[in-house]
Length: 93
Image (cartoon, rainbow, N blue to C red; front, side, top):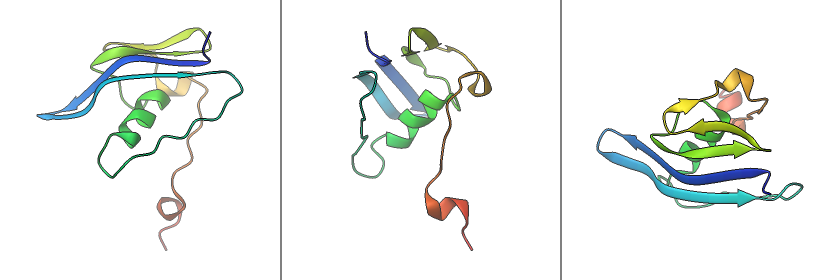
């Protein structure tokens, strides 16, 4: 069983498809990097995993607990997931 399982994840912002059918399985104890060019959906994927947004379609399961399934999602404050922004976003001065 995967620690993090993402299946058929879709997220759309108006006419723009930020994610279209993303599938990802991350084994417990492993490390995974999300890489790609600007605008490819990396931040959207991380925001969906953290619970800041809900997917339009697909599911997110963490350690056997369903966090999101289509439009239904566990709120971010109930997920136990921490997020650290890029260093420039923390202290812009």
